[in-house]
Amino acid sequence: MTQRTLAIIKPDAIGKGVAGQIIARVENAGFKILAAKMIHMSQAEAAGFYAVHRARPFFQSLCDFMTQGPCLPMVLEGENAIQRWRELMGATDPVKAAAGTIRKDFASSIEANAVHGSDSPETAGVEISYFFSSLELCPR
Ligand code: CMP
Image 1 (cartoon, helix red, strand yellow):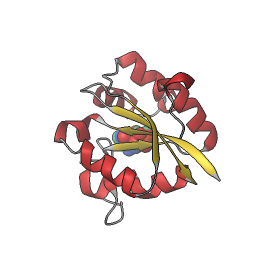
Image 2 (image 1 turned 120 degrees about the horizontal axis):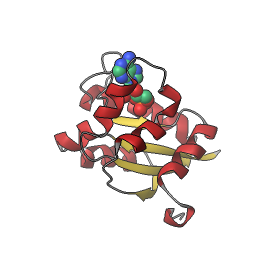
Image 3 (image 1 turned 90 degrees about the vertical axis):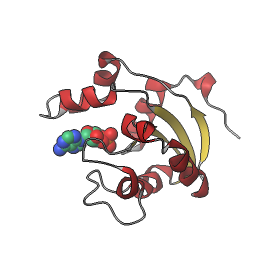
Image 4 (image 1 turned 135 degrees about the vertical axis):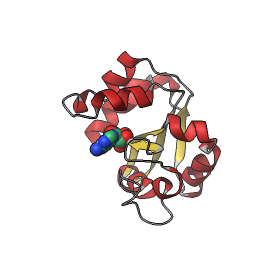
């Protein structure tokens, strides 16, 4: 089943200068990048994106982290894209991430964990439209 997912290269990875290496992994895994842009989120924008986590103890720290510098949201398309992108990312906590995954190789902590990926088709739809209009997606 062809799916779309929302991926974000987070501020820690942009700051380390590894965005290109992460995009290479995306392309080498066969995903089509339908849209991508560099943005610097405000507190309100980060809080809106992570609204589902607003009751968590790490919420304010997460919003501070996501606004510390630019990030790079992307729309990826491919067969079973949601699950496959999550496998490529590895576990949320880099200590638990498998060898060869993006988080194992590039993440610093459970918070500064280099990349984001949608966790379900419903979430992917909401997250993609949070950052991109339909006119910004380039199917091919
Ligand atoms: P992400 O996949 O973008 O979804 C929610 C984010 O919250 C997660 O990646 C981490 O960046 C962050 N996060 C999750 N769990 C924790 C935690 N226990 N402490 C701090 N940040 C966390």
